[in-house]
Length: 107
Image 1 (tube, rainbow, N blue to C red):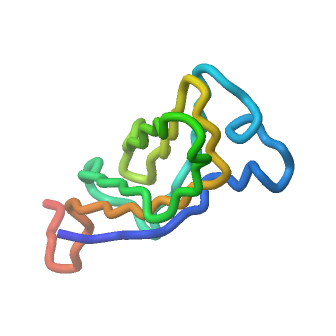
Image 2 (cartoon, rainbow, N blue to C red):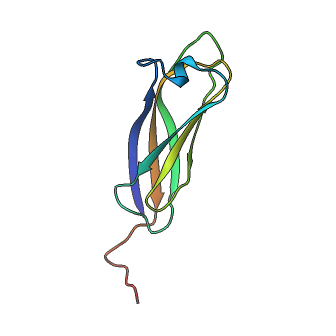
Image 3 (cartoon, rainbow, N blue to C red):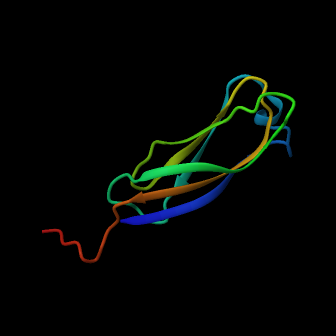
């Protein structure tokens, strides 16, 4: 079994009046992540928000998930909706799965 992990700032939209900060309604952002080395099969990936900066004048709505998980990487998908204004978000991720091993023989 192998473990890979990382941390990724997805956006900082308050700095340049980006869509997550100034927009409304359904909004999403996809961020590709590459593993440090390939897994043998697609691993299990968990994601958590480790920092969020969201305006407090409205409901704070956010959804974050891993999608398109392959042996080489995955996409972090962040979504918000309604009148939520998101200034910035950082996520942490953890992937656990089968990796190559020098003891494995391919016969």
